[in-house]
Amino acid sequence: YVTGQDFCVEELAIQEIMNRQAGDWKFNSSAFILPTFKLIKKELFNEVHFSNGRRFDDEATMHRFYLLASKIVFINDNLY
Image (cartoon, rainbow, N blue to C red; front, side, top):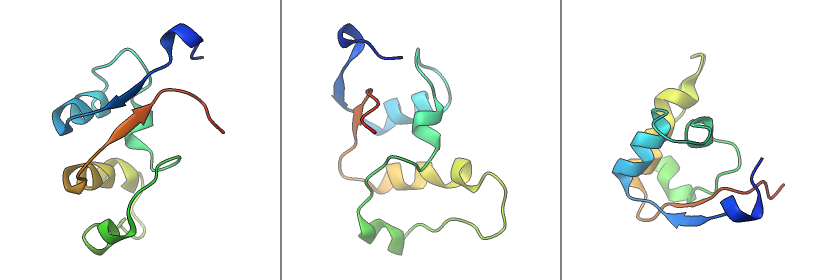
């Protein structure tokens, strides 16, 4: 649960994303692994594809989007 004092909006460097994806962070690393709740430019799907029939393909794929992205912004609030 994110309270007002914990709320933040951050523009993250690729190395910080990789660190957080690996679990080296105080919050849930699945926020950086799962493709849900992400806005991804459709052009990136020309370069990156999820594997068909592979279990946990999101874990093997999401870092590729991060590497190609020109900007990554993280908001640690449940906006759904």
